[in-house]
Image (cartoon, rainbow, N blue to C red):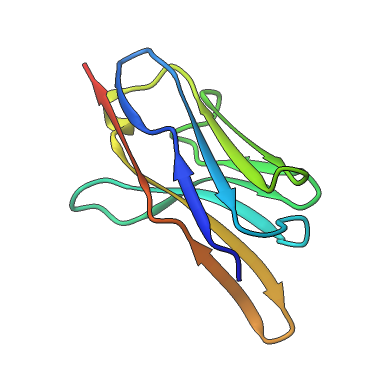
Amino acid sequence: QVQLVESGGGLVQAGGSLRLACAASGSISDINEMNWYRQAPAKQRELIAAVTSGGTTDYADSVKGRFTISRDNAENTVYLQMNNLKPEDTSIYYCNADKRTPWGPLMSWGQGTQVTVSS
């Protein structure tokens, strides 16, 4: 099970950009899905972006067209480029690794990184 460490969060004005990174302690090439979730205060954690081992991506409607997820298997890192940020994007952002095994999914989580968007 890999350890995940997020970085790149911070305070930005509305309309600005941030790039989050998720560094894994081991290889991610055999991890079926690498995901970014976010959780705002008093709200449930939501999946916002996913990238499969084959490079297929998917996004929540709330971020589609503004956020881009990518994975660099050689660097064992997943990125989330966030453009045109809005105050409602303010959340803690979590990286997740979802590895499918014959015994079920094996999930790993990072500790999260805070993103705050001011209006």
